[in-house]
Length: 52
Image (cartoon, rainbow, N blue to C red; front, side, top):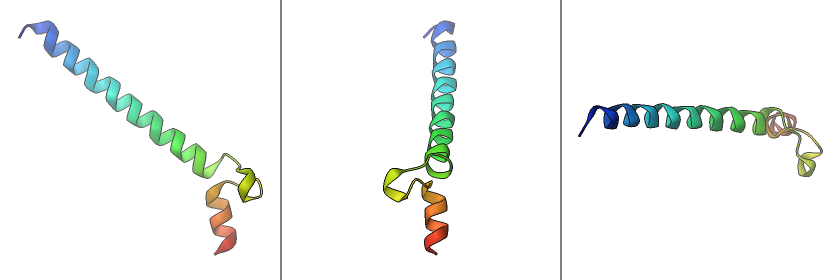
């Protein structure tokens, strides 16, 4: 194993963390901001609050 392998693994780890952060942000947008036509054009969270 050479030094480049360690740097590559580190970069890969950082890339995976970035992807996870983007997915969390996308999921939050999908559930809290984006309106859904099947829910009367409300975001799922707002629809759930309305039903409760």
